[in-house]
Structures are given as C-alpha cells and as structure tokens.
Image 1 (cartoon, rainbow, N blue to C red):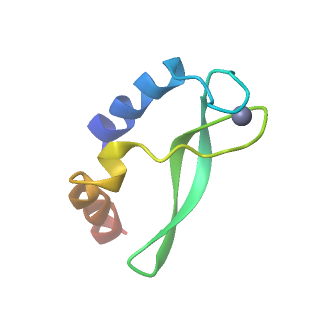
Image 2: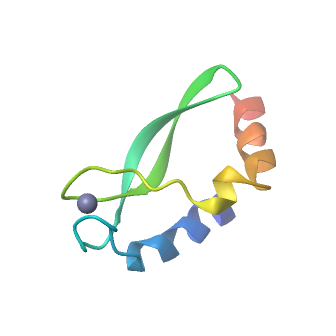
Image 3: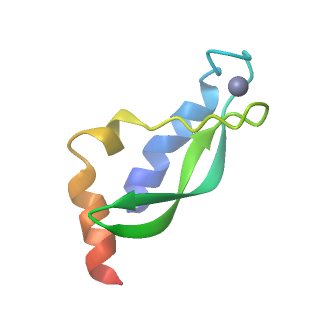
Length: 71
Ligand SMILES: [Zn+2]
C-alpha cells in the first residue's frame, strides 16, 4: 500500500489538463467492489478534477483489494 501511495506522488508533477495547475494529493473517497474507502489521489486544487492513476485503473487494483481485506 505504501508503495502504491508513493507511486501516486509522481502525479504531483503532472499538470491539470484544464487549468495547468500541478495536481495535489487529496483524500478522495472511491468506490471499488461495492465498498467505499478513502485514498489519497492526485487532484487539481483549482477545479477539483481527480486524476485516477493508471496504477489504480489497471493492474495495481490487486493492492486495493488487499486494503479492503485488511479492514
Ligand atoms: Zn484543474
């Protein structure tokens, strides 16, 4: 999990496509497999658009499932 969060940090160097502002990690509630849980995801501080990292959208979902199991 720590590794996953660390991989999100690189997105704080990414600019929002709409505003050109750097993304910041913000606690965001996401729904996965019917459960809601909070993750720090890169989001635009200006327009609030949450960027879903590809790690989350693809293979690393396994780690997210692990989080759910830990609960
Ligand atoms: Zn924005």
